Structure formats: C-alpha cells, structure tokens
Length: 299
Image (tube, rainbow, N blue to C red):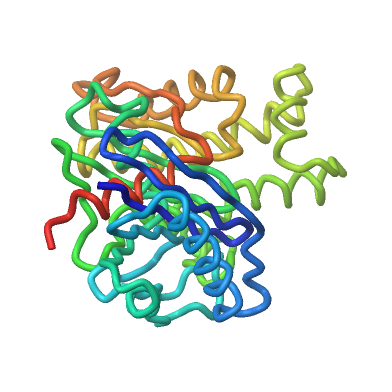
C-alpha cells in the first residue's frame, strides 16, 4: 500500500509518497505561502497531492504541521508559526476532496517517528527527538509507539518555562525555551547585540572559529536546551536524544557540549545513561513520519 505524507510548515510544504518498504517514490516541495491564508495554502497542498496521486496512487494521507494541534479532531489549535490557522478542519477538508482516510500529527512527532523507525533511533527502545530550528519542538517514541498525549501536544518543550517571567515570544509563555534557544532567538541576539547578519549560522561558525563572544552565546543557548532536556530525562527517561533542525547542522561541534551540559543536570545515577545523535532524515523526516503514521494507524 502506498501512503502520501504531507509536511506543512510555515515556510515550505513538502509532499511525498512512500511504499511498504518506507521508500520515498515521489517528492515535491514548494513555498507554503501561509501569509496568503489557509485556503490558498490548502489549494497548494491539494494540487501537490493530485500530481503525486497521478504518478503513484495512494490509499491514505498523513499530514504533519506545527503544534499545538488536536490529532483526534484533525485541527491545528494555536501554533505560533502558523498564526490564524486555529481550528481549521484540515483532515476533513482533505478527506472530502480525496475520499481517503487522512490523519494529522505534530511535525516533531512525525520526525520522531521517522527517526525511531529507520533513523538514528532505530536501535533504541525509547527515542526523544528534538528539532531546533525556527522554533523548538519534540516528539517521543517508546517501544515503537508514538506518545502523543491526550490532545497530541506531548513534547511541546518549546513552551517549557526556562526563565520565570522572562522574554516573550509569539503566543508562548514568558520565559519559554523557544524565546531563548530557537534559531529565531539566536538570530535575533546575533544581529542585535553583535551585528552578525547571517544570524544563528554565523554565530555557530564564529564559535567554531574560536571567537569568544560567539562561544559565550552558543554556550548559553546550549545551556537553555540542556535544562529542558534534563527535565525530559527526569520525566520520561529516554535512551537517546536525536537532535535535528537547522541550528543543529554543526552537530559535531554542538552535540558533545549539549551532552555534557545535560549530564551535569541529572541525577548521578542517570549520568551517561542516554545517548545523543544527529537526525538521519533531514527535510524528509516530516513527510516520512506522517506517511508511516497514516499507514500504521488502525482505522
């Protein structure tokens, strides 16, 4: 059975078709143009799916999008990176058009499922995936099962309070992790405080080159992420943290620092009891995970 996967992001839409062996048979991506409204973006998704279906007929559709969302109702709730998309019945609309089962899940959950199934976490019983990009999101897979929570919002660590009554970012809690350690936050500080026009990427590259201001900035950013991950260790105790997203591209430099900082903040008995790895699937993760989810859920 072929299954279609859709990754709806604030910048890009990606559509793929996978077969039973989880091989991607078809791929297309383009700008999501979310500023033009949800109806416009949905028309883009439908046209992409129509082109995919003409080449590789599929029997189910999985779609992932930024959270928070309600996977049972098939609606986005109040995602900070897709403003004005709340309570649009996206699964019902696609089902009406294609006459096929359509399932929705959080994009970080989709990436977690892809990494646990065939990526960096495939050898582990419990896999925690975190993406550090425009925003910060996570997903958790335990014994092959995606843990979504009552409303599909498990893993929303971007809204975890790291600094009480701290910075405000979008519609999140004051002091949320995303306000301090996301690519958006790192870019903002890089430009405002240091004049580094290439934002997060430039800050990391300067740190690798040994510039002290950059080293200090990256060290503080990783400290915030480590605080969040230490909280995760004490909450669900994963066997591995799989890290993805644009900020983590220089993983050979960042991951050892992040692992050390996380280990500093857990029980002595838990130190070095979990691994760190960089994500295997990159931009394919959302499409692959959404398709796997739609294929495997019993209807």
